[in-house]
Amino acid sequence: MDAIEAEHLVREFKNGPRAVDRIDLAVRSGEIYGFLGPNGAGKSTTVHMLTTLLPPTAGTARVAGYDVVHEGPQVRMRIGAALQEAALDPLLTGREHLRLQASLQAMPRNERRARAGELLARVGLSEAADRKVGGYSGGMKRRLDLALALVHRPPVLFLDEPTTGLDIQSRTALWGEVGRLAREEGVTVFLTTQYLEEADVLADRVGIIDHGRIVAEGTPAELKAQVGRPSVEAVPADPADRKLVGEILARFGEPITSAKGVAVRLREGESDLAGIVRALDADELKVEHLQLHQPSLDDVFLAKTGRSLEGEAPEEEQSARPGLAMEPA
Ligand SMILES: Nc1ncnc2c1ncn2[C@@H]1O[C@H](COP(=O)(O)OP(=O)(O)O)[C@@H](O)[C@H]1O
Ligand SMILES: [Mg+2]
Image (cartoon, rainbow, N blue to C red; front, side, top):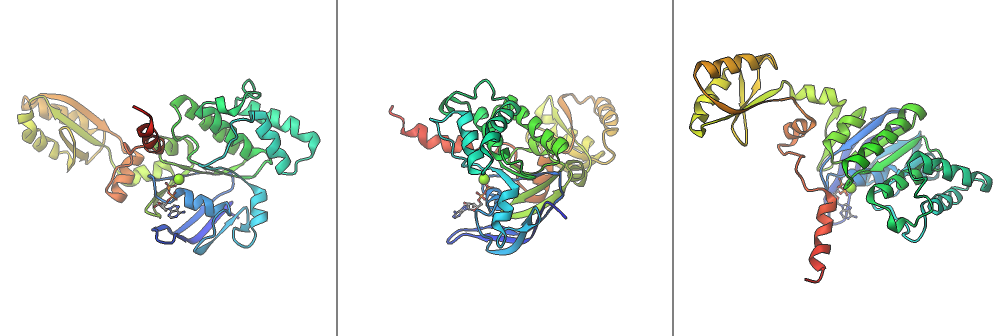
């Protein structure tokens, strides 16, 4: 039995788009599944359906073996979720949040204290445990969200963009903890992200979602191999040489777009590089910049959607703008 299964899952909103458009999922027990996509792709809507917060318009889903529509309570007992709109009370401390959660989960009173301490230590919040959450950094809040989701030892964990807006250090720390949960405790993790690197580093398998549809799925290595061979980009020292450099590169592969210079998808691969350098040399063409580019998940996204995922504004920045505009001049 897969830990998470979905078949033709659909969610439509009134007057809105088909936020999730017939997706199929099969996440194995103990697997870290990365659900990668840009803002508005349908990631949160999917998570909300899988965590029983939102009924599907059509299709079915089972989590930990239970149907999300007909067996909601059984599903909820077996999942932990750290969602994007997590509500932390700024006036409560981290430890108070955990003890509250433990009592909500009906954990026996004599176990709550130890469990809170254990989880705070695990997410690196022992020292900050008795400070009010209002003073926590973004990274500390996301780590507390994770601890709260783990109180009742759920076998399946949902994390909706757990590291959006975090600095790379906090992000890496969270990756470490999520990886450990899957490897050492066999927890199944369904994690959404708009960060290519996060999916690449952390996920055993990645599903790329765009406009409510899964456009590609596989291990990061499989997905990159689908895009194929590496490309090489050359920026001529003299812009007038662009055409000549392009002609030489074209001997080694199919031309692809390049912002700064000329680029080709190599026919052979990395081994073409020496030949390119020799050919450029033979024609006395100087290049300012010659770079080998290994396929990334962004190339996969580009190949499947015609757009690049990299460089899209993260959610935090977008929601910060109106706030800034309202500040008195
Ligand atoms: N409650 C809602 N009512 C109407 N439209 C919604 C609602 N929630 C999400 N949407 C729309 O559904 C699409 C998918 O949203 P969402 O699942 O939040 O995407 P993501 O989490 O990938 O950023 C978006 O176009 C969004 O505007
Ligand atoms: Mg979302």
